[in-house]
Length: 455
Image (cartoon, rainbow, N blue to C red; front, side, top):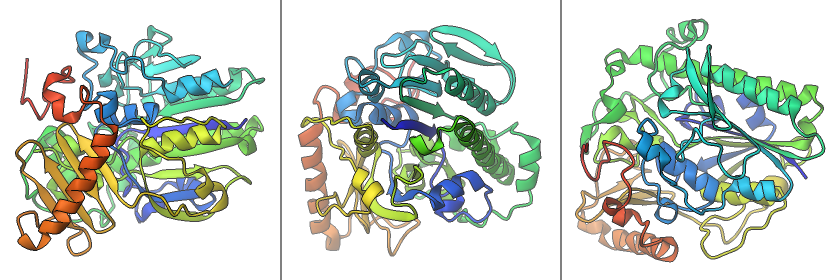
Protein backbone atom coordinates (compact mmCIF):
# COMPACT_ATOMS: atom_id res chain seq x y z
CA UNK A 1 0.00 0.00 0.00
CA UNK A 2 1.26 3.47 -0.90
CA UNK A 3 2.01 6.11 1.71
CA UNK A 4 0.26 9.44 1.07
CA UNK A 5 1.58 12.87 2.06
CA UNK A 6 -1.15 15.41 1.39
CA UNK A 7 -0.68 19.18 1.55
CA UNK A 8 -3.75 21.43 1.57
CA UNK A 9 -2.76 25.05 2.02
CA UNK A 10 -5.22 27.73 3.09
CA UNK A 11 -5.88 30.45 0.46
CA UNK A 12 -3.06 29.47 -1.90
CA UNK A 13 -4.31 30.60 -5.29
CA UNK A 14 -3.38 28.73 -8.45
CA UNK A 15 -1.91 31.86 -10.03
CA UNK A 16 0.57 32.16 -7.15
CA UNK A 17 3.00 29.44 -8.20
CA UNK A 18 5.77 29.37 -10.82
CA UNK A 19 4.41 26.04 -12.07
CA UNK A 20 1.24 27.89 -13.07
CA UNK A 21 3.06 30.79 -14.70
CA UNK A 22 3.98 33.20 -11.91
CA UNK A 23 7.30 34.81 -12.83
CA UNK A 24 8.35 36.33 -9.49
CA UNK A 25 7.46 33.90 -6.72
CA UNK A 26 10.34 31.65 -5.68
CA UNK A 27 9.12 28.11 -5.00
CA UNK A 28 11.75 25.60 -6.19
CA UNK A 29 10.33 22.63 -4.29
CA UNK A 30 6.81 22.92 -5.67
CA UNK A 31 8.22 23.65 -9.13
CA UNK A 32 10.27 20.47 -8.89
CA UNK A 33 7.23 18.45 -7.81
CA UNK A 34 5.24 19.81 -10.75
CA UNK A 35 7.99 19.29 -13.33
CA UNK A 36 8.72 15.73 -12.24
CA UNK A 37 5.10 14.82 -11.51
CA UNK A 38 1.66 15.65 -12.89
CA UNK A 39 0.10 19.11 -12.79
CA UNK A 40 -3.66 19.58 -13.15
CA UNK A 41 -4.17 22.83 -15.06
CA UNK A 42 -7.90 23.17 -14.40
CA UNK A 43 -8.37 22.23 -10.76
CA UNK A 44 -11.16 24.02 -8.90
CA UNK A 45 -12.76 24.21 -5.48
CA UNK A 46 -16.47 23.43 -5.10
CA UNK A 47 -16.81 26.52 -2.87
CA UNK A 48 -14.40 29.48 -2.62
CA UNK A 49 -14.21 29.58 1.18
CA UNK A 50 -12.49 27.35 3.75
CA UNK A 51 -14.93 25.09 5.62
CA UNK A 52 -17.21 23.90 2.79
CA UNK A 53 -14.23 23.36 0.47
CA UNK A 54 -12.42 21.23 3.05
CA UNK A 55 -15.58 19.33 3.92
CA UNK A 56 -16.01 18.47 0.23
CA UNK A 57 -12.50 17.00 0.14
CA UNK A 58 -12.98 14.97 3.31
CA UNK A 59 -16.44 13.64 2.40
CA UNK A 60 -16.39 13.57 -1.41
CA UNK A 61 -19.68 15.48 -1.36
CA UNK A 62 -20.85 18.92 -2.43
CA UNK A 63 -21.95 21.44 0.20
CA UNK A 64 -25.58 20.83 -0.76
CA UNK A 65 -24.97 17.26 0.42
CA UNK A 66 -22.76 17.64 3.52
CA UNK A 67 -24.47 20.84 4.65
CA UNK A 68 -21.51 23.14 5.37
CA UNK A 69 -21.92 26.28 3.24
CA UNK A 70 -19.65 28.92 4.78
CA UNK A 71 -16.62 29.23 7.01
CA UNK A 72 -17.29 28.06 10.55
CA UNK A 73 -16.53 30.55 13.29
CA UNK A 74 -14.74 28.22 15.69
CA UNK A 75 -14.06 31.09 18.08
CA UNK A 76 -17.72 30.78 18.99
CA UNK A 77 -17.78 27.91 21.48
CA UNK A 78 -21.42 27.05 20.74
CA UNK A 79 -20.81 26.77 17.00
CA UNK A 80 -17.64 24.82 17.64
CA UNK A 81 -19.61 22.17 19.52
CA UNK A 82 -21.96 21.47 16.60
CA UNK A 83 -21.42 18.18 14.80
CA UNK A 84 -21.13 19.77 11.37
CA UNK A 85 -20.29 16.62 9.41
CA UNK A 86 -22.74 14.45 11.29
CA UNK A 87 -22.48 10.79 10.34
CA UNK A 88 -20.51 11.35 7.14
CA UNK A 89 -17.68 8.85 6.68
CA UNK A 90 -14.56 10.83 5.87
CA UNK A 91 -11.62 9.94 3.68
CA UNK A 92 -9.51 9.61 6.84
CA UNK A 93 -11.90 7.02 8.30
CA UNK A 94 -11.87 5.00 5.09
CA UNK A 95 -8.09 4.99 5.00
CA UNK A 96 -7.84 4.09 8.69
CA UNK A 97 -10.28 1.20 8.23
CA UNK A 98 -8.12 -0.05 5.36
CA UNK A 99 -4.99 -0.23 7.48
CA UNK A 100 -3.48 3.24 7.23
CA UNK A 101 -2.08 5.20 10.14
CA UNK A 102 -3.71 8.61 9.73
CA UNK A 103 -2.49 11.99 10.97
CA UNK A 104 -3.51 15.63 10.67
CA UNK A 105 -1.04 18.43 11.34
CA UNK A 106 -2.42 21.92 10.80
CA UNK A 107 -5.79 23.20 9.67
CA UNK A 108 -9.02 21.19 9.87
CA UNK A 109 -11.80 23.84 10.00
CA UNK A 110 -14.74 21.50 9.50
CA UNK A 111 -16.05 22.08 13.00
CA UNK A 112 -14.91 21.21 16.52
CA UNK A 113 -11.26 21.41 15.54
CA UNK A 114 -9.99 21.17 19.11
CA UNK A 115 -11.33 17.64 19.39
CA UNK A 116 -9.71 14.66 17.73
CA UNK A 117 -11.97 13.69 14.84
CA UNK A 118 -13.02 10.16 13.84
CA UNK A 119 -10.62 8.46 11.48
CA UNK A 120 -7.42 9.99 12.85
CA UNK A 121 -4.73 8.27 14.87
CA UNK A 122 -2.79 11.50 15.40
CA UNK A 123 -4.51 14.87 15.75
CA UNK A 124 -2.48 18.09 15.92
CA UNK A 125 -4.95 20.66 14.68
CA UNK A 126 -4.65 24.39 14.81
CA UNK A 127 -7.52 24.68 17.23
CA UNK A 128 -9.24 28.04 17.00
CA UNK A 129 -9.66 29.59 13.57
CA UNK A 130 -7.78 32.64 14.87
CA UNK A 131 -4.74 30.49 15.63
CA UNK A 132 -3.60 31.03 12.07
CA UNK A 133 -1.82 34.31 12.79
CA UNK A 134 1.50 33.06 11.64
CA UNK A 135 4.06 33.95 14.27
CA UNK A 136 3.81 33.93 18.06
CA UNK A 137 1.89 32.08 20.76
CA UNK A 138 -0.36 29.92 18.60
CA UNK A 139 -2.76 27.50 20.24
CA UNK A 140 -2.86 23.91 19.08
CA UNK A 141 -5.00 20.90 19.81
CA UNK A 142 -3.19 17.62 20.44
CA UNK A 143 -5.80 14.86 20.67
CA UNK A 144 -8.16 17.20 22.43
CA UNK A 145 -5.60 18.90 24.68
CA UNK A 146 -4.59 22.49 23.97
CA UNK A 147 -0.95 23.47 24.23
CA UNK A 148 1.03 26.52 23.17
CA UNK A 149 4.22 26.88 21.18
CA UNK A 150 6.15 29.92 20.05
CA UNK A 151 7.37 30.48 16.53
CA UNK A 152 6.06 30.67 12.99
CA UNK A 153 3.02 28.45 12.68
CA UNK A 154 4.14 27.02 9.33
CA UNK A 155 7.33 25.72 10.89
CA UNK A 156 5.51 24.33 13.94
CA UNK A 157 3.12 22.41 11.69
CA UNK A 158 6.12 20.95 9.85
CA UNK A 159 7.83 20.05 13.14
CA UNK A 160 4.74 18.08 14.14
CA UNK A 161 4.63 16.36 10.75
CA UNK A 162 8.31 15.42 10.97
CA UNK A 163 7.73 14.04 14.45
CA UNK A 164 4.89 11.90 13.13
CA UNK A 165 7.01 10.49 10.31
CA UNK A 166 9.79 9.55 12.72
CA UNK A 167 7.56 8.04 15.39
CA UNK A 168 4.86 6.36 13.26
CA UNK A 169 4.09 2.64 13.19
CA UNK A 170 6.49 1.48 10.48
CA UNK A 171 4.49 -1.70 9.90
CA UNK A 172 1.60 0.26 8.39
CA UNK A 173 1.26 2.71 5.50
CA UNK A 174 0.53 6.29 6.48
CA UNK A 175 -1.72 9.12 5.38
CA UNK A 176 -0.34 12.44 6.59
CA UNK A 177 -2.45 15.56 5.98
CA UNK A 178 -0.53 18.83 6.37
CA UNK A 179 -2.68 21.95 6.47
CA UNK A 180 -0.62 25.14 6.21
CA UNK A 181 -2.38 28.42 6.96
CA UNK A 182 0.20 31.15 6.46
CA UNK A 183 -1.16 32.40 3.12
CA UNK A 184 -4.40 33.39 4.89
CA UNK A 185 -4.91 36.98 6.00
CA UNK A 186 -3.71 39.06 7.74
CA UNK A 187 -0.82 39.54 5.33
CA UNK A 188 1.59 40.93 7.91
CA UNK A 189 4.49 39.87 10.15
CA UNK A 190 5.89 37.13 7.93
CA UNK A 191 9.64 36.39 7.95
CA UNK A 192 11.44 39.61 7.08
CA UNK A 193 14.22 37.65 5.35
CA UNK A 194 11.61 36.65 2.74
CA UNK A 195 9.37 39.69 2.65
CA UNK A 196 12.29 42.04 2.03
CA UNK A 197 13.07 40.27 -1.23
CA UNK A 198 9.55 40.63 -2.55
CA UNK A 199 9.30 44.34 -1.79
CA UNK A 200 11.44 44.78 -4.90
CA UNK A 201 8.98 42.92 -7.11
CA UNK A 202 6.99 44.50 -9.90
CA UNK A 203 4.00 42.16 -9.27
CA UNK A 204 3.42 42.03 -13.01
CA UNK A 205 1.51 38.75 -12.67
CA UNK A 206 -1.27 40.58 -10.83
CA UNK A 207 -3.43 42.47 -13.35
CA UNK A 208 -4.02 46.14 -12.59
CA UNK A 209 -7.76 45.80 -12.03
CA UNK A 210 -8.99 48.93 -10.34
CA UNK A 211 -12.59 48.12 -9.52
CA UNK A 212 -15.00 45.26 -8.91
CA UNK A 213 -17.89 45.87 -11.28
CA UNK A 214 -20.63 43.77 -9.72
CA UNK A 215 -21.15 44.73 -6.10
CA UNK A 216 -19.17 46.09 -3.18
CA UNK A 217 -16.03 45.01 -1.39
CA UNK A 218 -16.46 43.04 1.84
CA UNK A 219 -14.60 40.85 4.31
CA UNK A 220 -10.86 40.73 3.71
CA UNK A 221 -11.23 43.31 0.95
CA UNK A 222 -11.88 45.89 3.68
CA UNK A 223 -8.80 45.13 5.81
CA UNK A 224 -6.32 47.99 6.31
CA UNK A 225 -3.75 46.09 4.22
CA UNK A 226 -5.59 47.21 1.08
CA UNK A 227 -4.15 50.69 1.62
CA UNK A 228 -0.59 49.35 1.17
CA UNK A 229 -1.20 46.86 -1.58
CA UNK A 230 2.42 46.24 -2.54
CA UNK A 231 3.36 45.43 1.06
CA UNK A 232 0.46 42.97 1.38
CA UNK A 233 1.45 41.37 -1.92
CA UNK A 234 5.06 41.07 -0.75
CA UNK A 235 3.85 39.42 2.46
CA UNK A 236 1.68 36.98 0.47
CA UNK A 237 4.51 36.07 -1.90
CA UNK A 238 6.76 35.49 1.13
CA UNK A 239 4.15 33.10 2.53
CA UNK A 240 4.35 30.96 -0.60
CA UNK A 241 8.14 30.75 -0.37
CA UNK A 242 7.91 29.90 3.33
CA UNK A 243 5.49 27.07 2.56
CA UNK A 244 7.76 25.87 -0.23
CA UNK A 245 10.63 25.65 2.26
CA UNK A 246 8.53 23.55 4.62
CA UNK A 247 7.35 21.21 1.87
CA UNK A 248 11.03 20.74 1.09
CA UNK A 249 11.74 19.86 4.71
CA UNK A 250 9.18 17.08 4.55
CA UNK A 251 10.49 15.77 1.24
CA UNK A 252 13.97 15.70 2.76
CA UNK A 253 12.58 13.79 5.73
CA UNK A 254 11.01 11.24 3.38
CA UNK A 255 14.40 10.83 1.71
CA UNK A 256 16.17 10.43 5.05
CA UNK A 257 13.70 7.75 6.13
CA UNK A 258 13.94 6.05 2.70
CA UNK A 259 10.23 6.59 2.14
CA UNK A 260 10.25 8.86 -0.88
CA UNK A 261 9.75 6.18 -3.54
CA UNK A 262 6.91 4.66 -1.53
CA UNK A 263 5.01 7.91 -0.99
CA UNK A 264 2.53 9.78 -3.17
CA UNK A 265 2.88 13.52 -2.57
CA UNK A 266 -0.08 15.78 -3.33
CA UNK A 267 -0.12 19.57 -3.14
CA UNK A 268 -3.32 21.61 -3.37
CA UNK A 269 -5.30 24.37 -1.66
CA UNK A 270 -8.80 24.64 -0.27
CA UNK A 271 -9.63 27.55 -2.63
CA UNK A 272 -8.04 30.47 -4.42
CA UNK A 273 -7.44 34.11 -3.51
CA UNK A 274 -7.45 37.59 -4.99
CA UNK A 275 -4.54 39.83 -4.02
CA UNK A 276 -5.76 42.98 -5.68
CA UNK A 277 -7.17 41.14 -8.70
CA UNK A 278 -10.37 42.91 -9.78
CA UNK A 279 -9.65 45.32 -6.94
CA UNK A 280 -10.60 42.49 -4.56
CA UNK A 281 -8.74 40.99 -1.61
CA UNK A 282 -9.85 37.56 -0.43
CA UNK A 283 -11.91 34.83 -2.02
CA UNK A 284 -15.61 34.27 -2.66
CA UNK A 285 -16.64 36.31 0.38
CA UNK A 286 -14.39 39.23 -0.51
CA UNK A 287 -17.37 40.86 -2.20
CA UNK A 288 -21.10 41.28 -1.72
CA UNK A 289 -22.79 39.63 -3.42
CA UNK A 290 -20.45 36.64 -3.15
CA UNK A 291 -18.27 35.96 -6.19
CA UNK A 292 -17.02 33.03 -8.23
CA UNK A 293 -14.10 34.85 -9.83
CA UNK A 294 -11.46 32.67 -11.48
CA UNK A 295 -8.88 33.69 -8.88
CA UNK A 296 -11.30 32.61 -6.14
CA UNK A 297 -12.15 29.16 -7.51
CA UNK A 298 -8.92 27.94 -9.16
CA UNK A 299 -6.48 25.92 -7.03
CA UNK A 300 -3.08 24.31 -7.62
CA UNK A 301 -3.11 20.52 -7.82
CA UNK A 302 0.18 18.66 -8.18
CA UNK A 303 0.94 14.93 -7.85
CA UNK A 304 4.38 13.38 -7.49
CA UNK A 305 5.37 9.76 -6.94
CA UNK A 306 8.75 8.77 -8.40
CA UNK A 307 8.55 5.88 -10.84
CA UNK A 308 4.78 5.48 -10.49
CA UNK A 309 3.28 8.38 -12.42
CA UNK A 310 3.44 9.29 -16.09
CA UNK A 311 5.59 12.24 -15.11
CA UNK A 312 5.87 15.58 -16.86
CA UNK A 313 2.20 15.78 -17.81
CA UNK A 314 0.01 18.83 -17.63
CA UNK A 315 -3.61 17.66 -17.65
CA UNK A 316 -6.38 19.97 -18.84
CA UNK A 317 -9.42 18.12 -17.48
CA UNK A 318 -11.72 19.96 -15.07
CA UNK A 319 -11.31 18.52 -11.57
CA UNK A 320 -12.50 19.48 -8.10
CA UNK A 321 -12.12 18.30 -4.50
CA UNK A 322 -14.76 15.59 -4.89
CA UNK A 323 -12.70 14.06 -7.71
CA UNK A 324 -9.60 14.35 -5.52
CA UNK A 325 -11.41 12.44 -2.76
CA UNK A 326 -12.10 9.58 -5.16
CA UNK A 327 -8.58 9.68 -6.63
CA UNK A 328 -6.80 9.48 -3.27
CA UNK A 329 -8.90 6.49 -2.25
CA UNK A 330 -8.39 4.83 -5.63
CA UNK A 331 -4.64 5.30 -5.31
CA UNK A 332 -4.85 3.61 -1.91
CA UNK A 333 -6.75 0.69 -3.42
CA UNK A 334 -10.09 1.65 -1.88
CA UNK A 335 -13.17 1.60 -4.08
CA UNK A 336 -16.00 3.87 -2.95
CA UNK A 337 -19.24 3.32 -4.79
CA UNK A 338 -22.68 4.81 -4.49
CA UNK A 339 -24.88 7.27 -6.30
CA UNK A 340 -24.25 9.98 -3.69
CA UNK A 341 -20.76 10.76 -4.94
CA UNK A 342 -20.47 13.35 -7.72
CA UNK A 343 -16.70 12.96 -8.09
CA UNK A 344 -14.72 10.51 -10.17
CA UNK A 345 -11.20 9.14 -9.82
CA UNK A 346 -8.64 10.35 -12.33
CA UNK A 347 -5.89 7.94 -11.24
CA UNK A 348 -5.39 6.54 -14.73
CA UNK A 349 -4.67 10.06 -16.00
CA UNK A 350 -1.82 10.21 -13.49
CA UNK A 351 -0.36 6.77 -13.97
CA UNK A 352 -1.05 6.01 -17.64
CA UNK A 353 -1.68 9.42 -19.25
CA UNK A 354 -4.97 7.97 -20.37
CA UNK A 355 -7.83 10.23 -21.41
CA UNK A 356 -11.35 9.49 -20.17
CA UNK A 357 -13.84 10.09 -23.01
CA UNK A 358 -16.65 10.35 -20.45
CA UNK A 359 -14.93 12.97 -18.27
CA UNK A 360 -17.03 16.00 -17.43
CA UNK A 361 -16.64 19.09 -19.61
CA UNK A 362 -17.89 21.63 -17.04
CA UNK A 363 -17.04 22.89 -13.60
CA UNK A 364 -19.92 23.28 -11.15
CA UNK A 365 -19.65 25.17 -7.88
CA UNK A 366 -21.80 26.73 -5.19
CA UNK A 367 -21.59 29.12 -2.26
CA UNK A 368 -24.74 29.16 -0.16
CA UNK A 369 -27.62 30.08 -2.48
CA UNK A 370 -25.22 30.98 -5.30
CA UNK A 371 -24.59 28.37 -7.99
CA UNK A 372 -22.19 28.45 -10.93
CA UNK A 373 -21.34 26.42 -14.00
CA UNK A 374 -18.28 26.97 -16.19
CA UNK A 375 -17.37 25.55 -19.59
CA UNK A 376 -14.05 26.09 -21.33
CA UNK A 377 -15.45 29.44 -22.49
CA UNK A 378 -18.48 30.60 -20.53
CA UNK A 379 -19.24 30.99 -16.85
CA UNK A 380 -22.81 31.31 -15.60
CA UNK A 381 -23.42 32.51 -12.03
CA UNK A 382 -26.96 32.40 -10.63
CA UNK A 383 -27.96 33.75 -7.23
CA UNK A 384 -31.22 32.31 -5.96
CA UNK A 385 -33.98 33.21 -5.69
CA UNK A 386 -33.75 36.63 -7.40
CA UNK A 387 -30.22 37.30 -8.64
CA UNK A 388 -28.25 39.23 -9.62
CA UNK A 389 -27.11 36.73 -12.23
CA UNK A 390 -24.08 36.85 -14.49
CA UNK A 391 -22.71 35.33 -17.69
CA UNK A 392 -19.10 35.87 -18.70
CA UNK A 393 -17.26 35.00 -21.90
CA UNK A 394 -13.88 33.98 -20.50
CA UNK A 395 -12.21 33.98 -23.91
CA UNK A 396 -13.21 37.49 -25.01
CA UNK A 397 -13.39 38.86 -21.47
CA UNK A 398 -10.97 36.94 -19.22
CA UNK A 399 -11.09 39.64 -16.53
CA UNK A 400 -14.85 39.10 -16.11
CA UNK A 401 -15.84 42.72 -16.66
CA UNK A 402 -18.84 42.40 -19.00
CA UNK A 403 -22.03 40.72 -17.82
CA UNK A 404 -23.83 39.15 -20.80
CA UNK A 405 -26.75 37.70 -18.84
CA UNK A 406 -29.35 40.15 -20.14
CA UNK A 407 -28.17 39.97 -23.76
CA UNK A 408 -30.89 38.15 -25.76
CA UNK A 409 -28.24 36.61 -27.99
CA UNK A 410 -27.17 34.38 -25.12
CA UNK A 411 -30.64 33.26 -24.04
CA UNK A 412 -30.38 29.69 -25.34
CA UNK A 413 -26.88 29.27 -23.89
CA UNK A 414 -28.07 30.48 -20.47
CA UNK A 415 -31.03 28.11 -20.62
CA UNK A 416 -28.81 25.16 -21.53
CA UNK A 417 -26.25 25.88 -18.81
CA UNK A 418 -28.97 26.44 -16.22
CA UNK A 419 -30.59 23.12 -17.14
CA UNK A 420 -27.26 21.29 -16.80
CA UNK A 421 -26.56 22.90 -13.45
CA UNK A 422 -30.08 22.23 -12.17
CA UNK A 423 -29.87 18.61 -13.28
CA UNK A 424 -26.61 18.18 -11.38
CA UNK A 425 -28.02 19.50 -8.12
CA UNK A 426 -31.29 17.61 -8.55
CA UNK A 427 -29.20 14.45 -8.82
CA UNK A 428 -26.91 15.05 -5.86
CA UNK A 429 -28.35 17.54 -3.37
CA UNK A 430 -29.96 16.67 -0.06
CA UNK A 431 -32.95 19.00 0.05
CA UNK A 432 -32.49 19.50 3.80
CA UNK A 433 -28.84 20.53 3.35
CA UNK A 434 -29.17 22.28 0.01
CA UNK A 435 -27.71 25.72 -0.48
CA UNK A 436 -31.16 26.82 -1.60
CA UNK A 437 -32.29 26.05 1.95
CA UNK A 438 -29.32 27.76 3.56
CA UNK A 439 -31.37 30.23 5.61
CA UNK A 440 -32.80 27.29 7.56
CA UNK A 441 -29.46 25.65 8.27
CA UNK A 442 -27.20 26.27 11.30
CA UNK A 443 -25.49 29.64 11.38
CA UNK A 444 -21.82 29.33 10.43
CA UNK A 445 -20.56 32.81 11.35
CA UNK A 446 -21.84 36.32 12.14
CA UNK A 447 -21.56 37.67 8.58
CA UNK A 448 -23.23 35.11 6.32
CA UNK A 449 -23.99 36.88 3.07
CA UNK A 450 -27.47 35.39 2.76
CA UNK A 451 -28.55 36.68 6.19
CA UNK A 452 -26.55 39.86 6.64
CA UNK A 453 -24.85 40.48 9.96
CA UNK A 454 -26.38 38.63 12.91
CA UNK A 455 -25.88 38.48 16.64
